[in-house]
Length: 213
Image (cartoon, rainbow, N blue to C red):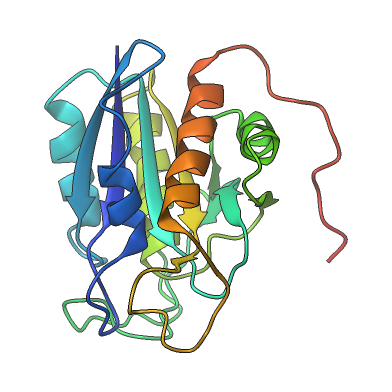
């Protein structure tokens, strides 16, 4: 039984990316599942091929990608990815798609098939600020979540897939604009709690985690 957890390389001039810094610090085994960790590039064009290459290497029960959402004050479990790229900044290859569909023949959106509310609740129970998010943005993070949905839909139907956005890490120099941040150890603790809830099985919570606006 295995889990693939990915984080991104640094982007937008930063020296580090707390998403992969946190992923690296996760234990190698969580609740009997081997945790395989990988860094993926912050770029649009090759993301699906890179994810597919990682997923064909082994039989993963879960694939969880982790990314940075600078400016958010909680760790966010993403519920949905939409079929659009609209990049405010270029990716690490200089590519900046604007109003482009990710897959021309793809559905408008893919919803994570993980127990997203249980994952949020587990982080909250662990004392880590967390919330359910209904937008993964329109940059590479949303793109990756959408492509994971496509891969599971077409090639890996037994896998569970999802995405978590983390905050800036207090210890890292990339937080130059005094955005909300939390200690890297808390980010790791939150991810650990979310993964434990992810692998527990059973139905998701039926609880009002929605937003009014």
